Length: 352
Ligand code: CP3
Image (tube, rainbow, N blue to C red; front, side, top):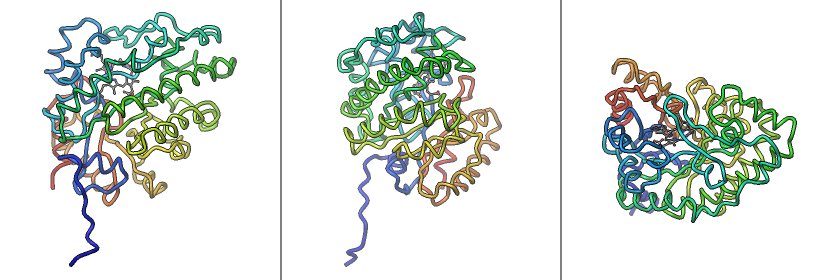
């Protein structure tokens, strides 16, 4: 009798992302793509046409369910990600948010003073974000055991950047101005976002999200010292609190252009860390032998001929051989990406 045999219980039909997020080497590699439900898919664009405002589109659980499942069916990814946005927290906090073609998010009443920060509303996520939690329940019912569902929220710094800048920004000058010249206002803002984010992520897990991602896309705008002093305490609080509230839910972290902050990120308490494409993956893997990573193909690789996509994906697989790894792009898939290219990436991850 083989008493040493480890029986691995397969939780999902496509288990690769789930296993790696749990820091185990998967039997088969798993892949998902940042922004995998989106404008590069014709079936997404067709549904999107029916809504003028992006936020109205995100607020319809039936639509959200359909859009969330599209890439699982169309390109065969090994995880679904809730179709929503990191900015859905802003309206409940009292900010006026709209999305404009070619311009992205616009906040009509950005925060510039401590007084404005103090006027932010307290948020009951069960109430004001009920539509997201309802979507998660419907998505889980529609997915069954096919693939895990990722929920997500923005990192407090990235969410703060939109609240203070009033939209996307190249330098984050307004946010840094507040950080350096009015640290009390900055801390108070970060504290408020942290509290809502913990509640929101916990509620997503309880509604059925299997894995949670904290997307602190713009953390890389900071040097390690400022990140450590101004951001780490808040982001790490999010990880610690959600881990205690949802001990069985793996937690991922993503930041763009931020490999200089890996020493800090590795202390956050995340199960896996996202990498963009600018870093040398071999060096990173060597420096962090026990850390699971996610990434890191350049999204623009998907504009190359299929043969090149295959070659670069095989090279990526070779580099992480023997390591638990979540395959992904280094940032979101671009709207102009051919669907066949996204599929070639996923198929190459899955080939023998
Ligand atoms: O498929 C998925 O990944 C799930 C959906 C998702 C969206 N946004 C949909 C979206 C996710 C996970 C996000 C996260 C998000 N949103 C981040 C963090 C990840 C990253 O990409 O760095 C950030 C910084 C945002 C903020 C945001 N939302 C911007 C800057 C924009 C405008 C630029 C753009 O991509 O259009 C959005 C709008 C947005 N969020 C769209 C989608 C599909 C496009 C809106 C539309 O279709 O009109």
